[in-house]
Image (cartoon, rainbow, N blue to C red; front, side, top):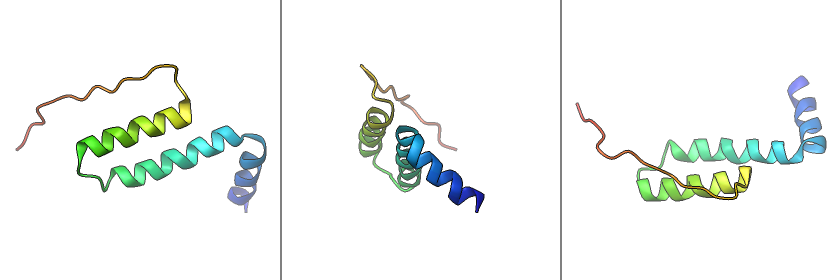
Length: 68
């Protein structure tokens, strides 16, 4: 019951925060399933732009993942 009420209050009074939380949760679910690094990077940029609305943004990826 408390979770439902908090969800309602967040949607009503903290709309931007609520929407950002929903978008980030959805991205997190998709990120675990994505295998194409370019697609994942593009989706990450889209999510950050939508939720945080930065004036400028760049994404740096480290090359050379160690394999066991």
